[in-house]
Image 1: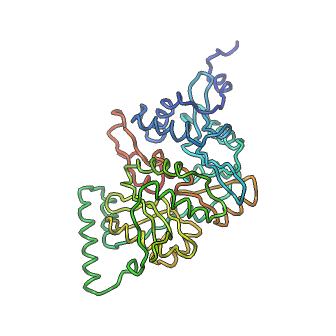
Image 2: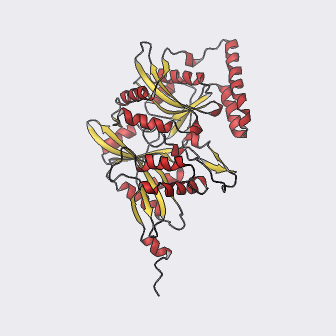
Image 3: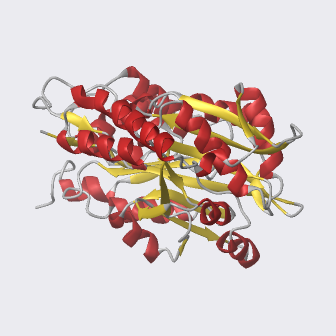
Length: 403
């Protein structure tokens, strides 16, 4: 006897991969909450809007490089792999890149092949470069099957303790979970400053004449574009597009306000720029830092000094092949691994340029700036009273739920 038309096996066989549509946003938000937040319901309306704006109706979307969904034969959505398109320039050629984002499957038991089907369909798109900068260990195993190359430098995160006493106090507050004890952090930081003054010890950050100046989005976008133009492989963005990305990055409330800075030398000329979040307990997180060649150390010192004035006791950010030269000269920096970055390119020269570090990836170039990577949105009442632990989010990972 034939199986009924609604049998799971037949429904699975009738599944199809297609481009995501605006009307899918509500169902994808519901899936996002269940997969990444272990709750139910579509959560905050901002989640639906972010999925629609960033993954479905991105201003640079092109046919063939859209966000993909796996639709089952019964009309349910089984999974999604997001695509953030990035037009790029290599020498005098225009290329199309995309960063994979928010790769999720609703029920891996019911649809065991959904993840691999989505990934293979994604790689069949007509893009020149495929990139991901928020890859965890599980996803990395899948990416290896697609023969993507590992980017070791930007897969590291650098950490600089601006104030050691404050840094230790902040770590203790985070570990204890006593948010009411955050007032101890500035007290510890102040105690160290007094001790250094009494000991007449100079601070290395003060040995720099460069100045970090607050600026508006437009001024920052202009500076960032000017500095990125010095790399062989770089985004082909208008100032409006950079401002659009910064606008979304500013909405990552869990990381604190976003400070935009232009760094100028003694003559007032542009030497670099940086954008960083000023988080709770003095935690600073650099979203992007660019500098003129050979000026990386002075740009870093100016930005770190500015972050100290904003109350940061430590700063961290993704490493970069050129920024590493400045980090080595600043000293007192240590490194840790958070998320991996991988890349693939049709042209071997493009791939070699990326691996050599003469490219702009990570930060604004990828999906690390997206609120989807960090924000908890709203949790439904049936989530068991659990709250999001945003410690991993501050390091560029999706938050997990803890009791």
